[in-house]
Length: 123
Image (cartoon, rainbow, N blue to C red):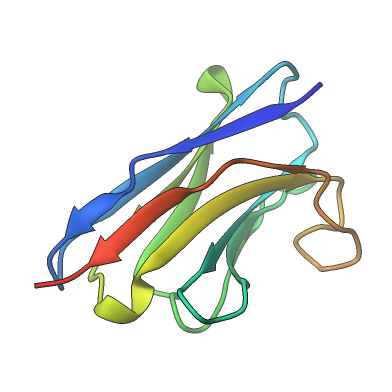
């Protein structure tokens, strides 16, 4: 069974950078799609980015496009989220989630979730 574990969260100053990791175990990611989501205090969970396991395309929500980059290292069975130019509005708990092809296009839902890693952007 696929298990996901996020890491890399922490406290960073505005304008700083952070790289989150989503390490998969139990199953090779293969055709799984991986999405990054976040939830800020008092707000609903929102999608941030997605890596398609079917065609390897990447997707970004407008609010992070140009600042965040999602990538996958197949050898390490890990997906990363490089976050640059971080702002206080990026604060929240970040989760990675895996799903079948169609997750990134929102035709399918995620089946597996990590426990989350907290990101705090503050001066």
